[in-house]
Length: 183
Image 1 (cartoon, one colour):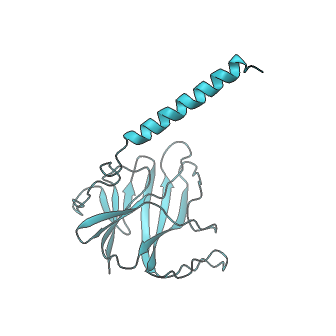
Image 2 (spheres, rainbow, N blue to C red):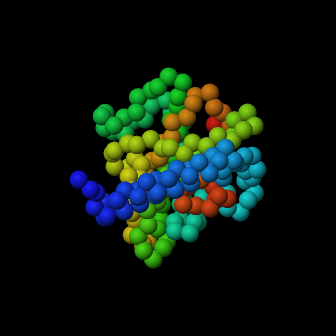
Image 3 (cartoon, rainbow, N blue to C red):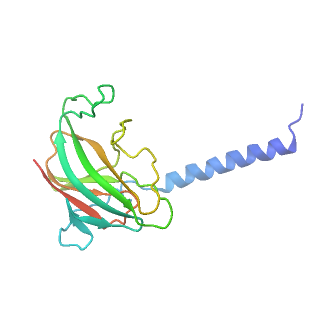
């Protein structure tokens, strides 16, 4: 039984598009990409670096980190969603308020925590998923001029110490919040 011309074209498109995706991914050098570039030049004097309690204005949001905490467990108020202590790990909790300053709804993103440890900057770009209101962003969209306050949680190694910054998702590379010195 012969394949139809349509099926053959679909198969060709599928293989060709997958080849392009693989080639595009092979061409990326993650060791030298902007996400892992040495950020040792963090500078509190930069105009786009703010401290906890100050407002960072991005293209779509005014973002304010209200408080930051480092703990060995996360109590969400729901025993099924709590994060239990894990050996050799701590949880960095960032309580943050996003205000949409655009003219249409926008989705805030978690972003990355950068920690300078032993002279090298480490990027923690995966926040913990906690399915309880007030924890995480869960693909929420904010209508214009509305706000959302939530807790973002990042799991980090207990051994890591040093200056920490948070770079909100969808912000420019130079827009950061100085979280303090983790001890």
